[in-house]
Figure (cartoon, rainbow, N blue to C red):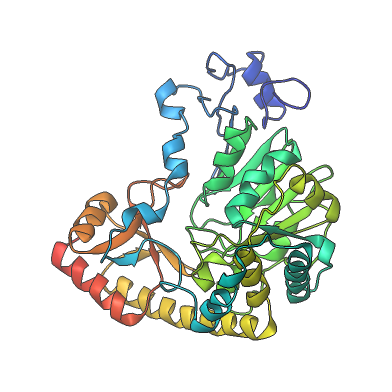
Length: 406
């Protein structure tokens, strides 16, 4: 239901009339009165749906508009079998660098005791110093995914999720019965704040965006702000961008939350480390009700270690390597006739081929894993996402594509 009790959340003016049957075009609705409707033309379209995702648009069948939760749950790791060359998962390397592994190993002898408040405070202080924030503007998380799982605690009446993008936030909101409006960007995936329903009191946007590798200008993100609205910026891949020019992590706004992850750059997917940056009152709402000791000793150590100045410098060197590898990889793929979306700023590329599913299966048969793209709202069966990899691995990929054909 919308803030006024109207079930036509996300619609304005004539759209509300249409949804109620009073306007010239009635919108088809399911039994629970949720609905989905395009309310803007290209380059973006907004679909406003009920919390269970069963909304339908005028002229559509029920099945056409059902939100597939299995697709929202899909991640690249399921594409990878032991021994495969991995272009499906956006983690850099198979494990953390030696110095970080040694730091973590040095704490193994302390796992017999609970982490104490001083360790948690030290990790928060390290993150705050890294971003030029105050310690009470930091909420440590068991992975960025926990940050998405906490979003329903904000009590949103209508959340807008910018797509194509990482699907975990939408899934977490839907499973908590929060109504979600999809704001689907079309190529070149340029964001316009006017595409977002004015009624949305929560907006979720990735920057850089997974899977398009698009970085939105910081001023465009800030243009999403409205009285009574919270903007969450998923910056899980921001440290993989040289210089982080569009990050909002170092800027304090009362209504902007920034989510960061250690998973990708530091190859810590199995440890679950991340954090939120934002106003203390917002973080308190998200933190309320979490279990005692939400992060363990090794997680706190990893967060503190990777926030140190030397680690930040190392991350930027990694970002420079990724940028060089990405440019070379784009050139190789384009030379083979593959459509690659640009500009690309993240550690992954979005490509389009005639039959992506067939190519994905053929590559898998040849020991190469790539990420299907059709599970991202706004993309279709012609899309694949490829993690940026060094030249030797790209050589193997191109050779396999040449062998199996497009």
